[in-house]
Length: 176
Image 1 (cartoon, rainbow, N blue to C red):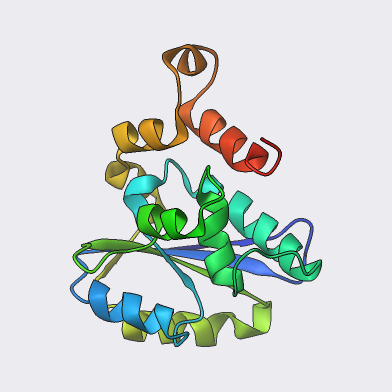
Image 2 (image 1 turned 180 degrees about the horizontal axis):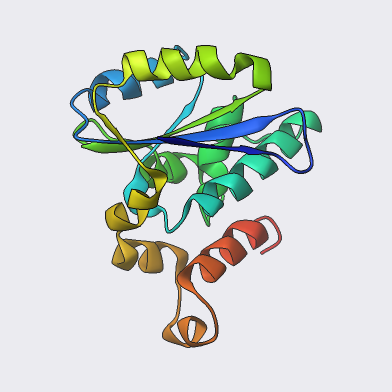
């Protein structure tokens, strides 16, 4: 029920994405993440078009971590920050992090191959929800909110996909 990809630029690291629905303990999970007790990023799937977005954000976060240029305190908060089209850290957490009443969550883990099974069991023990295939993320996406947040124009959608526009905003936020 999870998806794991090796990072091309950092082949010793993998990104695992786990999607859960019918979540009953979002407040507890959010608090554990804030306190640093969860080794993962907890993301509101409504703000994601496609899991590829997360891979882009994770690659960038790992790269910034390796070069000592992160803008946040941890790799997982950096992933959430990198999903955002703006440079406002608090806004990124409001838009992309989970809230106390959320009923679904996408959990992102960055790990080596040897750490994978331990991290997976730790997360599945903590999350009180039903694991679902990653393909279901599209059914949880709120395209209207995503278009508004990333300021996607109708003209852009004629020449590319919503995912293309979102990835472009994520990639260029540092230079605009």
